[in-house]
Image (tube, rainbow, N blue to C red; front, side):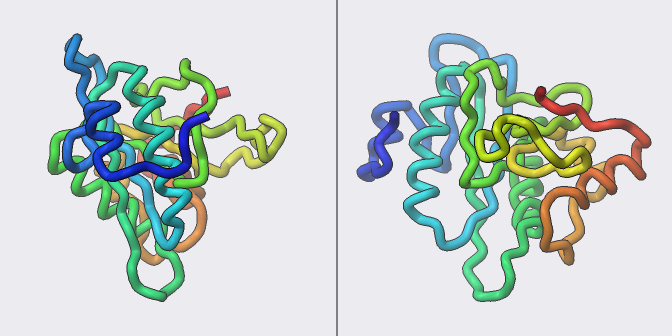
Length: 185
């Protein structure tokens, strides 16, 4: 298990993480370039644990990635959709073709769960231990979701007025493309 706390500089030295949460393997050319977007507010220890775990997990996949932590600092209800939109816009401007929207309280367990996009958007957290590894919601799309930036742009992102889980994203994609979503089962 990874340590829950880190000292400034630990990630930079141990995992060669660049400023801004970016990693690129030095020993090979990565096949994938991925932005992990984490909507966040008031969970400092959880975020610290998430970052340590994810940098360790992702660096082993030899992908080029950057973790965007998008923080809501006001006391209004948590607007996850708006934070995701902000992170997605920043990631797309930086040239990341693959976007993964990730809850700070979810961690991948299987190394084979590659943090990259496929042809269709996919739910990467369809098997969670809190549900005994069976996802109970057929149309729910939360936790960790991978989508190509061009697909996200095509559906015009998420509604900034939407405060719930990612079901809104499923409905917007299906009405836009008339396609099914992929689940990682």
